[in-house]
Image (cartoon, rainbow over all chains, first blue to last red):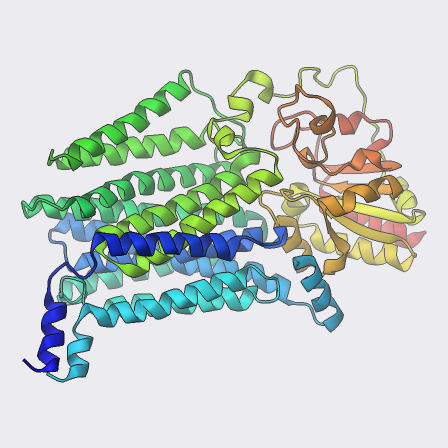
Length: 122
Length: 481
């Protein structure tokens, strides 16, 4: 068996690409990443940060997308249109609102003020 | 078949792009924690999202089936994305800065709703095919269904309360705690029944419904003042439910992104609760202090005590001849869109040699950082914005404190009267200043529904009216002095 065929068979194995222990390991490590990334945040940025994380869990839209091909029936398709719409709202709305909030912090022309921003943030 | 096509047609292709996506998410999130990197951080995270979505669309699933393989699926996807874009973009662009918290609640809610719908479609599909799902897929699906549904309905209630469609005050029902417990136990019991082999779509639907009721019932009795913490908690919930859905679907990016949000959201929730000297369990227990009657306006009422009302001219004189003025903004400033007027007043006062500082309570407004966003919009320099611990020692030195539409965060009852529902919440110690001027719409109680003794203090005078108009009048008077 040549290399190409080997790779193709290795990945053709249905629904077994990730075993549950691997997924739990990813889950636990991601939790620690989440804890570490957020540990030091100035009060000022709490609202934009909440909004930003909110946009990131819009990733559920990917969940809805991959379920489309796996499901059959009109009810399923109808519900998935709603799910994809919901996920899309979550993503585009989330990132846009966060950007609008943050653009207000950006408008600081003089370098002196930028330094002060840093000070307030530390 | 070349090596490249083999790789492209395997799930590893999608997963490798997912790795890039979550690198972008983590870097972006890290950026969001610093004022200078935040704008870029948000954009980086958005790029990660684009990568994840595109990868999912052009690649194959873990079962080797392409995500887009039928024209009917294309219609489903295009329709969903179009509807979502048509609703999401305008609402995000048009929303006023004051209404941002409820917008975040709404965006969070639909995320949870999507998870609940995905779980149902998954389960329904197994039942249609007569398949016996593996426990490692079934348990996370049930978890995602319950948590997603709670998050969707809870967020909608939070939205309703902040948008003032629903009353902001705690809504208590008789037997509240008992009903919540019963609903919770029902969800768990029914989930266990399904997991142990009862195959029933109606039972699954009943879990979604019970969780929906639970989401409503848990958030309804929570006072509006606690709503930021609740939204943050529900945000973490949606993240967790997304991670669970990721395990059920064997999708790495859902697991990683969902769990990062779940974890960071939990931290953020705790930071907010600490800032209000509240614990998350006691907030969830409903209403202040677990729902005692102390929530309504203070027991003393307003009779027998008088407030001193003042005029814009008097306030102008007080301010113009002060050495140090501390401005304490609150939700009233946000509602009146008075931040530009406040900036103008600051400029005029500084021209007269008055030192002006802003005292920002961590939860002033409806969310932590709400005031900073508004004042930054009006170009108030950062160094003038002081956090609570920074400004509190300065109040005794201040000649005048100008409270603009803030109430609960200045309530001295939080320090002095142990029977007050907000006793122990850290406040801005405005009452330490030589004089206090409160700009207020009316004599109504604050968002928490609690009476504020500050208004009856003899050093306090009140100027009634819309905050923007009042500030404008004061500015004009200062200029004419």
